Image 1 (cartoon, rainbow, N blue to C red):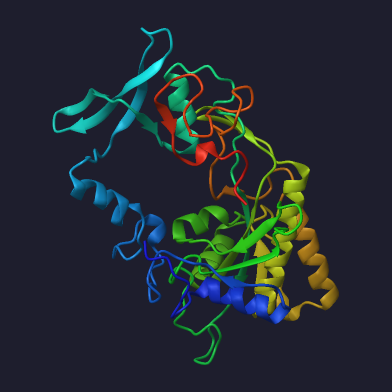
Image 2 (cartoon, rainbow, N blue to C red):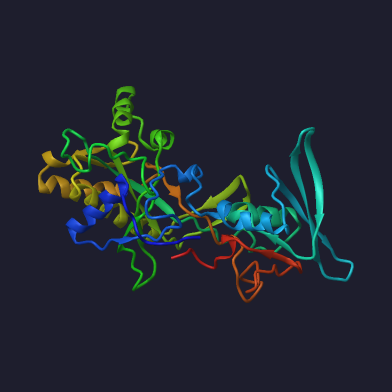
Length: 362
């Protein structure tokens, strides 16, 4: 997969994260990526148009097709796992699915000796429930790696400005730098890391608060020079998936505390890197003009906003990764699959995605 840790030209957001951390003395490191060192595509969240990011579409799936041992059906949706209990115990014998044809939607069944479900932490438990599994742990223990963001505006008034005037927020490797300043990896293992997102105009406009027409126009006009950092928490809180569209989730107090700490550090990093304005996505749209603020005003702003952004759903919260909804364990009373990934209820039915994580990754 070509994973390596060199970065020839760092993108706008990541170079700001790195410089801000260095100026504050915060730890910062390079994130290994499955792409060459000169990879500068800011669109990989939508699929790498050059195919230089070595994800599954460029590696394992290619190997599968070239081996002649498999096929890929686009626009395919699994309906249910087919089981047989003629021997007194359920066993998976295939999958019923629908797919597109030139003549419309068709339904087919594939028979199999071994059935592997890898539909993701939201769709996998829903599929297992549709297939008749009754284990109450299917759908529980759902974790999301909650994310909140801070932003900083960096005008480009002169040729010698930093970051360079040609640097744009939507270009460059998406995550090449990371800070573990509040990660707590060496103590509890539960904290927050600080990284950078991939934000293009559509997502940017949704995250930014609506104050007025002229306000959102001004924010959008600054889009290409507005850097974003996010705090991602390893969550203790969890949720329940009843179906793909019926999901409940609740943060624990410690999760909110870790996100607040990460958000505060994010704003400090942006200011230390030279941002002229900083803020969060709070619905009231507060903005601090950093270079006009006193030290007391700056301290009050970052502390108040890092706490306020998590109160009463007043700011958007995202999920970086979904996991844990079919947790692996040694007992069916507390898990959905055994240590080999096989479901407790149905022989020959395995889960092979992030659903099996016993806890949130961290």
